[in-house]
Amino acid sequence: MTERRRLIAGNWKMNGLLADGVRRAAALAARARDALADGERKLPDIAICPPATILGAVGKAIGGSPIALGAQDCHAEDKGARTGDIAAAMLAELSCRYVIVGHSERRAGHGETDAVVRAKAEAAHRAGLIAVVCVGESAGERKAGKHLDVIARQIEASLPPGVAAANTVVAYEPVWAIGTGLNATAADIAAAHRHLRLRLSAFSRDGADIRVLYGGSANARNAAEILAVPGVDGCLVGGASLDVDAFWAMVLAASS
Ligand code: PEP
Image 1 (cartoon, rainbow, N blue to C red):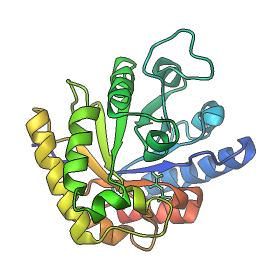
Image 2: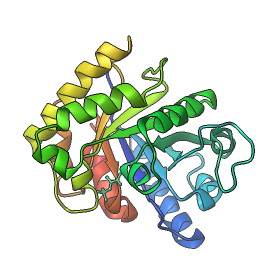
Image 3: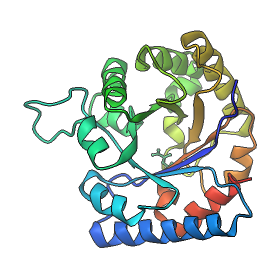
Image 4: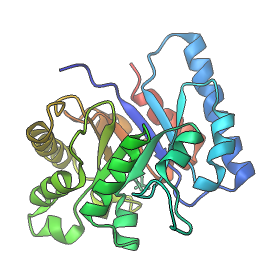
């Protein structure tokens, strides 16, 4: 097993017109460059996932900094009659390194099944991107005590064969914690991550090395506690990633 580098990834969702997004990205890039020049801390991997419309401009704003670019979704196919969709190769051409697939907002709002998510992850891999595959139980599933079964099923059905630490990151995001201000407890997060690690190890030879992030109302105040939970390799951050100070504080919480 190699040491898993922490990753702090910001999912801006459908927020950010051009000027706003470029300003935020440039501010983060400046902080990252200063931190590197300072040399005092070892930064974690950092990614920001802006809306598709500003990927190119945000990519330029973070160019030369240690911040990587990510997208929020891709289509499962490489090209063709798919009006409004974006192929993974198009994201790679814009210098994306990551693409989120299977976010609960797409599973719920766009009817994306595990099979669709898996096909998208495969498309991401074909394009040389790292797929950030999201799994997580609903409030009802947790209440019914089915959460561990649900995330095990999602992981097995959403990951394509050939997943490896170099091409896949898993994000555990309990749906009821996303954008609600509710966090899973440290014990709940630890149990879910332990379960996912076991499933990943059964699924892939690289299972011990694939990073597993936590997402769901993670912010500057609770990041240190979440990152201290065994098995948590970083955070996928929604709301707090729109605030430069908050996001950067989370990056520093993950740095060593
Ligand atoms: C997300 O949407 O991936 C997320 C974790 O959102 P938030 O941090 O706002 O809960």
